[in-house]
Image 1 (cartoon, rainbow, N blue to C red):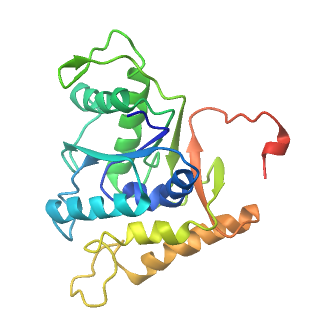
Image 2 (image 1 turned 135 degrees about the vertical axis):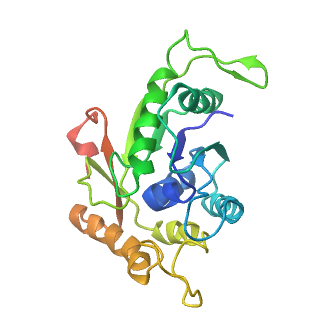
Length: 238
């Protein structure tokens, strides 16, 4: 299966939080989107690797993604090394995405910055013919995505491009809150993480609303880029 977009996250829920509305919008437009989780989120204070797996499957169904994989790197301890790069390269070559969306270039959680660089490096290396990978015993062809964009997570990084996601914020929130063990629950006695507070839950909406305000729409999501974005005409910009 060939994908238009492969969204990569260090943990299950990173993609939904960072670019869930953008993904929902592109799927509604007929694009094929897949998600790759690097770890199982097993070090998360709340929930377990198994509950995260179940929640990730539920969120994928809500967004309507074509495929979701998890390569099982060590949560908190994975490195940008050959073994990790090759695992991602195999997935990139299997689905040949035109575009990759990945973690924020820097963030509060150390895995986000590490995952960002690891995914970006793997995208480049995937285009080198002398790097051999196999899937199901078959040697894969080289493939390099045309573009790599980084979504924004905990830190308020200034975006290079902003996507109008008006009409899709509800779908994003539905997918995010499929991770029931991770976010605010008034009946839970251990709401003690930065993302499990009611304030954080509300921030998902108001951050998107504020970015939308800045570009004259209802809601938006921001991304940083690795190279200059190009348009055919100034009139392509809204």
